[in-house]
Each structure stands twice: as structure tokens, then as C-alpha cells.
Length: 469
Image 1 (tube, rainbow, N blue to C red):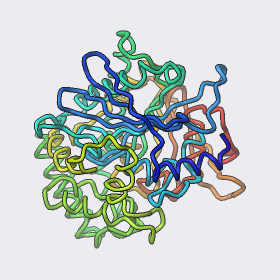
Image 2: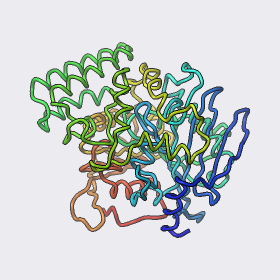
Image 3: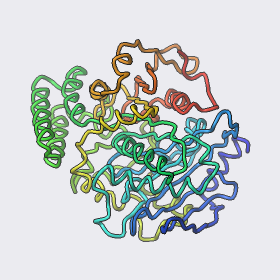
Image 4: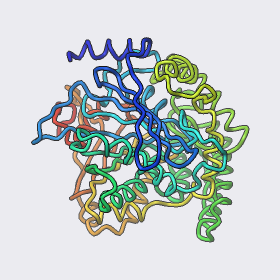
């Protein structure tokens, strides 16, 4: 299909559904799948546990090739939060084919791969639980549900089984990604899951909360958003958090983390945690994760999503209204009593005891198993700062770490521009990208670099001259 026709179809299919319902049964659970007549999209629910329903949405790239010598990649996108919707935010705000005005996105990652968005964990976005106690309480419980979903989606589709799957995560999604990676490997080895794991990419990911909270004060002092008094307060609370983590008091550490964000907010005149060049609320995509952590803050989060506008770069239409209006009508299978994001307040609270736990060991295990792991980070991010990311990377026990750290970086350029857009270096199965001029949401702030980067990570057959070394 010609590119222009594909875009027109995607736009129109939001307004006029061209799909049909296919009930499917597998392993005792029920999966509902819907697909467009031309096969360019499919979506559905998987009952990952009794009364726990996870929603997924798959886009087949119009650039997809079937060359067995150059396998076409599939990207599974995992959003953070916890409680933020990949089907909504990742899809319409960041990398999907359409923006929140349902206009074509030139920088969609479909140019490099097929895309699979999942509202993870259950209770997020369109995913829902019939009983509140069924939301997950740990990253590993979330990984088990995601593995069940992958079994449902991949085991019945031979075309997908031929494509390497790349798990790409943002923010708290990084913790989901590494636990899912290990869970998926076990399922593959046991013969329960039919897919090829191509690699894992961790974008501005919350892998080591301790390293991040210790990075906030020094980083913001260096860029003049904190003075010495603010730095002292920040470091004091970071030490308190470290003590709580060392004592295994993870819920208390989450409470102290929330307090630390408050101290930094007041001491910096409300710096945006996702871009230190901005004040909080100026970036329409960003939301401070602590806004999910308390009842008042959760309501602020939902109101914030509802207020997204295109008046600021990276914005768009009213995401909440879009997902509960046009998109819900298009999808057809969302139950009438399910509101997109309606159970988000359950998700963070349930994960409160896991929120501050590190997942460095899981990254180490993936590397030891030979899985390709990529880390990419936006220069302007605070909450998952590059400074904090470098700190946890240096804690890896991976036997290639010393060689990796001793290497020089390679500069990144984009298109015909001679301006440096970032740096990268790779050693064996570990890769790191430093993305200049980007905050927490790298695909939004630097779409050109992000698109070329993801092409390199996934070894997409469709390459470009965006990045030159």
C-alpha cells in the first residue's frame, strides 16, 4: 500500500471502523481480537488472570518487508507511571502513526518496525480488573501477566513469530521491561512462548531509584535550579531514603521519595521533573510520577491528561476525551463501564512496596544471558537523570563493563545538520545513547534522533542517514 493511502486509511479508520470481531480461545483463557480488513491494525483483550483483562493494540508497518535475510522487527512499547497508558500516551503522544488530533506523525516508529502497545499493568488505560484486589503488587507479577499476553498474541501468529521482538520502555516501564525480558526468556526456553527476543531498550528508565534521588540535588544545583540550601535539603532526604532502602522499608522509602519531590519543587520554584529547562506544567506530555502517589495527586494526574493541548510543542488534542470518545468508538470492544484511565488510582498504590526497589540485577542477568540491552537518556531529564543512569550502569557486574567504560563516545548528527545531537557507544551486547536537547520524553523532544536510534537498535531493514558516525 502506498504511504499516503496508508496514512489516509489510518486517519479514516479512527472515524469509521472497518473491523470484525474474532473470538479466540487459548489455554483456558479468552482472548478477543479485532483486526482491520487490510490487516494494518489489530487489537484486543487478553484475560491474563480470571477477571483481570489486559488491552493491546498492534500496528503493522506499511514499510514492512518479508525478506528472511533481514527480519522485520516488532517493538513492544511499555509506558511508565506506574499507571500511565502506553495505548494512549506512547501511541498518540510519542511514537504511534497519529497524534492526538488524529493527524499523521512523520516521525512514527512504524517507519522502522511494527508497533505493539499494551496498557500495562492491568488497571491502566483500557486494561481493567473486575475486583480491585486483582491489580499487581510487584514488577514480577506485572511481568507474568505480560508474558501471558505475549503467549496469546504471538503463539497464534506465525508471521509475528518470525520477527524479533524488541521491548522498549520509558520511565517506570524500564522495570517492567527487564522483569518481562527474564520472564519471557523462561517461557521461551520452556516451550510456552513462540517468539524471538531481539533486545531490550531502556529509555530514561527508573532502574535504580536510589541513584536517581541522589542525582537530583547535585544536578539541579549545577544548572542553577537549586542553591546550597536546596541542595542540603535534597541530599539529607536522599540519605534518609537510602537508609530506608537498606533496611528494606520500601513503602517508607516511597513516602520519603514523595517528600523529596515536594522539597525540590518548593526549593526550585517548581522545576519540571521531566525537563529542567522548564517549570512544572509547561511540558504538556510530562507528568510528575508523584502525582500518581496520593489521592489528591492522582486526581491532578487525570486532570492533567485531560488538559493536554498543542499550544506547547509536543502537545495535541484532549487525550482523555479522545480515548474515551473517538478511539473507544473505533475499538468497539471496550466495555461501556470501562473508562480509559479510570482505574489508574489503583495501580500506583498497589505497587507502592515495589516502586523504590532497584532492578540492576535484572539488567545484569539479561546481559549475562547475551540479550542486547540498550540504555538511552535525555540530557534534560531530572526524574530519571543521565547522572543517575550512569551511576547505576557503573554498578553492573557485567564482565564487559570495564571495557565499555574505557571506550570513547561517538557523536550523533541528524539529517544534514552539523550540530551534535548526542553521543553513543557500544560494547558487545550493551549500548548507551546520550540524547542532547531531550528531556524525559526523547521521541517527543528529539524525534529525528529517536527514529534513527530505534532503527539501529532493532537493526531495521529500513535505515536512513539520520545518524552519522
